[in-house]
Length: 154
Image (cartoon, rainbow, N blue to C red):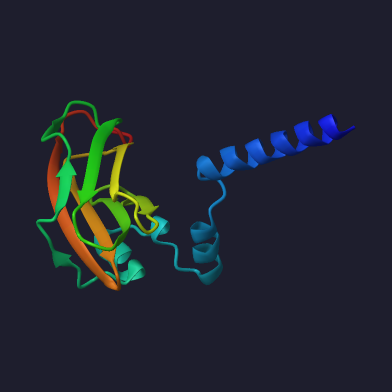
């Protein structure tokens, strides 16, 4: 009977891990929905920055964005963002001209290396904006990506 309990618990824990890992269950999104301030539902760059409280973000050369200058297919654009700002706790990726500009939001614990790599869908040529939170302050950098074949319905 102990073996069955162990297997049942393992399967349930694995399923919960997959759900959280897939982004279906997220405490940040759940809390944002509750308070009606979900930046993932924003329709413009300015609206995202306002919802995040980052309207006065300072430009920084300590944020590195690795993205192609020309993306042949906007359906899959590889983007890497690294922060050299001490105390970085968040990296937020924004695709400015997309219908829903906020692409991803990553949180880092103390001692973690603040670097991400992901693939984003881009409908047209636009700026990829990296927003980094360190302490109570936001920093930003951007890189322009020219899309030759759209990925958001284009």
